[in-house]
Length: 209
Image 1 (spheres, rainbow, N blue to C red):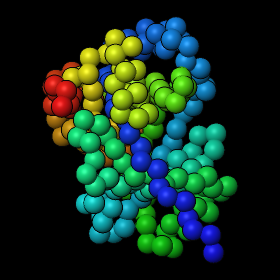
Image 2 (image 1 turned 90 degrees about the horizontal axis):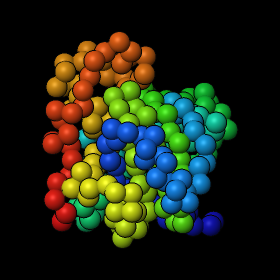
Image 3 (image 1 turned 180 degrees about the horizontal axis):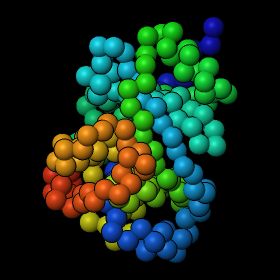
């Protein structure tokens, strides 16, 4: 039996954007190549005891122009200046059958979330311009040194980086504004006036460490 490949260590940071079009122009001016824009629909799964949530882990079934099953878990001894997660991901051919397999294993969908994402490549760095129901963000994924260098090239202030996942940001918003829903979808936010600004000091990482 062949050994399974080791999991990937995903290292990234996010930045909240007030002018995503300007940032996109900067990426293109640096020579970044767009991989296109997609609308992602995600289902987060957990068991009835919430074991994955308590462990700060994620089991996700994503659908855009493909279908991907992803598991993420915290990295022991992770660099606190970055968001680092162990990631195992596989492409699956049938969304409904994958849900049935997860159900048979005791996992159920507990949350739906969406994003509109345009991805760019520049060298070994992946940049993701994300439109969330509550705002626009840039996600930079690479090695730690490359992330810091690319953030500087784009004129982004390192102390403004965000290490929370989008679901973590949403949970803070949900509590702050007493939102009566747990699904992070564009439909749920339609007609709502939700300003992330008051929470930015809480979610930004602060001075370089």
